[in-house]
Amino acid sequence: MDTNKMRELKALAERAQDSHQSYEDFADLADDKCVLSLLAEIERLDRESQNLSSQVGQCDRERRAFRAERDELEAENEALRQSKDRAMSLVDQLELQHAKLKAAVQELELDAERYRFVRNPIGTTSPLAIWNEGKMPLFSGMADAVVDEFMAKEATHD
Image (cartoon, rainbow, N blue to C red):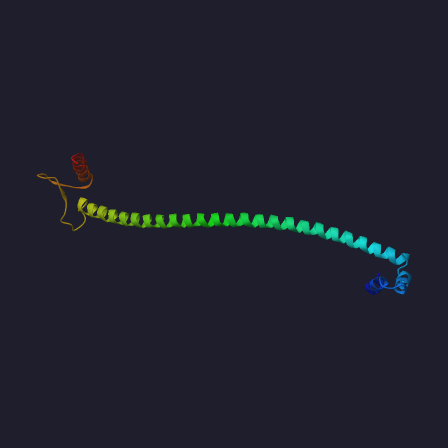
């Protein structure tokens, strides 16, 4: 049934409440076919309404599931941000420690280079050597052994 005929039926039904003639006009227009068509339309709209209600329910369940997943992802992202911040802090600490160790190594390398220069003066113009009091100058492995011996004695006097 088209919407124009439905409007006409509605208008006649409203007028039929007030007069007998309007009721007869309504009854003429509202034949069995018309009533069956209206009932079929009501049933179709009822089914459509139930289907839409079901779809709304499904959409609502999906929306809640998406929100729960979003909340989980936000919590995971926050945990990852905190983990990244801790990692960056650790990296900063390690870089600082690395810089200190690098400076210490450079200082030790320079000390070792000085020691080797004094320990192995042969082949250089160095006037320096390691002396054991009252004895000849010490070179290479002998110088190392004497230095190690005196360092060990110093360590035990502390």
